[in-house]
Each structure stands twice: as C-alpha cells, then as structure tokens.
Length: 454
Image 1 (cartoon, helix red, strand yellow):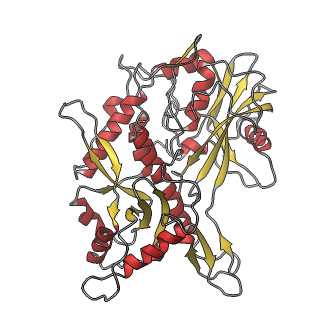
Image 2 (cartoon, helix red, strand yellow):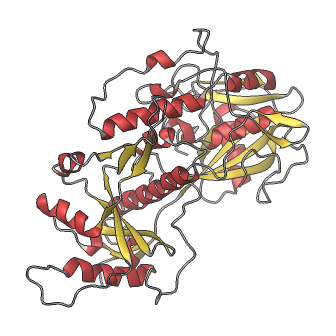
Image 3 (cartoon, rainbow, N blue to C red):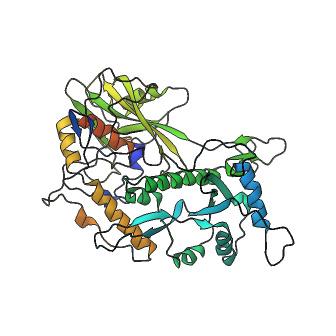
C-alpha cells in the first residue's frame, strides 16, 4: 500500500518555507467557560473555519429564480446582451449577480480599516464584482465571459443576489487592472490566518472562498472523462460535469477526500501523542492524520494510521467534529477532516520515518503551558495587516520574524496549529477539559466537552 503524508490538516500550511509568519507566540489566549466549574483557555467559535457557508441554502425548486437552473438561464440572457448591437429585450433586473474571480487558486480580495485609531486592525473582504464589471474587465484583456466559465456558489434570498465564481488564471493582464482598484489575489491560507474568528461575517466569507476554490480546482482536475477520455462539459450551473461523448455521458460530481485526524490519548499517564513532519517549522507539533482507504470505516482508519505512523495500538475511538479543508494542493481540492479522540492500548512509540520526523507523548500540563503562551490573536492581526498592504500594492518583502518570540524574548518550547485548524481544537479540548472516558462513540453526537459551539 502506498502511504500518504501524515498530519495533512496542518502540514499543508505549516511548512518552514511558507508559514513562518504563523510562529507568533505570547502569553495570552481568549478564555471561556464550558462548564461552571471548569475554566478553559480555548477559542470560542460557532463553527470551524471553512464551515458555516452563509450562501449555501437549502435546495431550491427549479422554478425559483435563485435556484441554479433558473439563475443559469438568466445568466445566459445577461451574457448575450450587448447594448450597442443587440435587438434582444433587456434581461430581467432580478436577481442581481455577483462574481468572485480566482487566479491560481487565490480569491480576489480587498481590505479596509474601520475607525481612525492607529491600533485599528484592517479587515479583508472578498472581491465581489458585478457581472457587467466582470465582463468589462475580462473584455479589456481580450477574454470573453461565457456561461460555462461561471460556477454557481449560492444565493441570499433576503438580498435577491446570486453568487458565482470564475477562474481567470489564464489572463495575467487582469492583475494590474484589478490592482488599480485596490484588489489583490491572495492565497486562501493567508486569508484563513488573517480572519478574525470572532467576526461571524468574516468567517462566513472565508467559508464561501473555501467552497469556491474547491469547486474551481475540481473543475480544473476534471476536464476529461476518466472513463473514455473525452472532454467534459459543465452541467447544473457548474455543480457537476458530464462527458461530452454521446455514447458515454458519464456524470462527474465534485470530489471530496475524507481524512481522519486524531489525538491519541494515554489515559493512565494523562498524556497525548503528538507528531512532527520534517516540513514543519521548528517546535511545532500536531495530531496524527491520514486519508481513509477504500473499504474501511472511520474507526478502522484511525487505528490503522496511528499504528502505521507511530506503532501505537488504538482501542476506543470517540468522535469530536469535522472540518472542510480546501487549502491543500490543487490535486486535492477539498479534504474533509474528521476529528477523533483515540485511546491508546499500547504506549511504545515506533515512528515510521517515511511518514513522521518524530512522535512523542506530551503531558497535559505541558500542553496547557504551550497553549497559554500562544498568542494566536497577534498572528491574526499581523497577517491581516499584511493582506491590507498587499491589496494596497505595498511591497510584500517585510520580515515578520520579530514577532516570533514570547514576551520574555525566549522561544516557547512547543506550539500547535492555530484556531483555524481542527487539530487545535482536538488538542485544546483535551488539555483544558476532561474528555469523557465513556465518551460518545464515533458516528454519534459530538461530545459535550468540545470547545466548539457547533
């Protein structure tokens, strides 16, 4: 069996070459109380990052003007319209269409600062543009906007708006054109770290961007039929594809790659197993993780991956929560991270060096201390400032290394992924609360001890 990299939910982001700006460490962390007798040092979220998409409504009937089929027919009418040459009747004014361009997996974004104080933190926003403006910008670059290039994202009934995404990776001239309007194509992972998790609107925009990127990357991967090799064509406003070969007509649906991610717990000695990959920045530790193989259950995947990577036998498996993770490589457009607590039956570690650089048991006390000095809010604010500078065309070469240290000037002995990753919530839930020993088995309702208010 060909093995795939462990700790996927974080290794795709926390590499030493691309993620140094996340090593912001200090002494504070937002606190909340989950039980009256138990104070925690955890981040209060209504949903994981990339979950809670506000424009993914219930399935609408085909005759509803905001449904994919009706909106797509209206879209075609708008795109055919040319005020200078057409004799066609004008398209309907309702619903309104907004388009989010992407370039090489990066959504268009803008940034703004509300208030006049020096310490006000900028906030990024998705770079929605109207359908006429999208046609105009692309037309200036010699590109035609067609209905098959647009992918339906969702709608807001209260605003009478339908949202679309378009991939403009093939047109580099669009970058300075939009840059003049203080728009910029920004890496989704950068936007993830720059998002204020206490802002529900910002978290919603991040979820929209993640959904859009996953769909567009899937479209790029599925240009040809895997059955006969012929070209595929978009159907249902880009929500699926179909083989163009009349004798095949195979239907192709968006791809989701399920991944188990688990915090392995030693009950007897009150420890948790954490691992490192060689690509990680120094002193970073995280949960083990791995793709689910065909023909195995979630529980079996947890046990297999833990044994393959660290040589630990796992017994009981307890479900925690799940998280969409659309920030991996384009070849894996959207992973679904399924989080578990896994209880060890053996304790001797035998690391597979092809999967991990190291794996060690860490006491609850040490993990709590590491969480207590990690100032994730500082990382968010600094990254938000970086996005603001990018959107305003400021040089991007500034060093952020001065913010890596704790207030004493010394580096923390270890740290974990930030609150945008499910790994953080698995670790902090265990560290700051007693995970039920007779917890909810996999497939059942989420344990009440979770720090997420899902």
